[in-house]
Length: 259
Image (tube, rainbow, N blue to C red; front, side):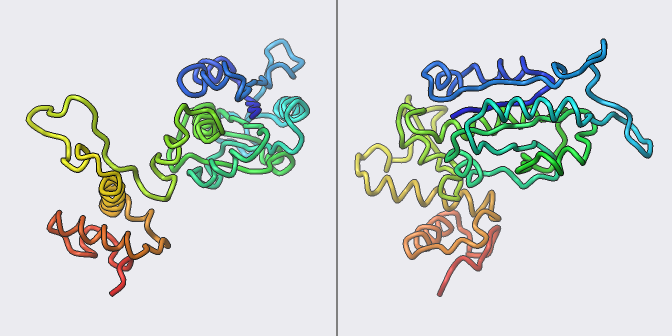
């Protein structure tokens, strides 16, 4: 997959994606990450890419011309049909479903903003999509761009050593991940749940699903909104709550149970 990032800080993107999963994917030729700096398309000695906002107010706004020129270069070199995606506070929330959608593409152009953001006319003319990581403020869109690249990359075929790793990640089936344990068997007097030591694969599957359901119910109940639990999931979630001395609807959404 081909990622093109329009950014005023290309070294930030290059360094951040040179480690771990993304770094190995680049080395193996599974992804390509390139950056384009809007400053390269300025004509003044100061390489100016921003200006004061009309109407007054604090901060500076990114100018249309240099950013548009950078986008055009990135788009021209990206695979045909690659969308131009701006990282903006007003964009749709980035989540695992969106990552899966992006992972089906041959490429994408990510546009990272700075200062007070983009001239709105640039968004109107060039944006195919707008993405936000959440309701908080970052100094720039580079962190968001790197997060998108990382989340999408790990979904691509052959990127992870074990294809099941991505399938079992948190949010892949709309649930938080289950707890995980490794050696040694006892830490500070606390042992590993016995079911994980007994080698019964079906029992382990059920235990992991139960823990994922329970953890989601207690910590992120909104993830269950609109999700219809099947018979097994309802049974396992009831068992989890009973083990925690909780009743359906206590610290979680009661509507996910049928009588």
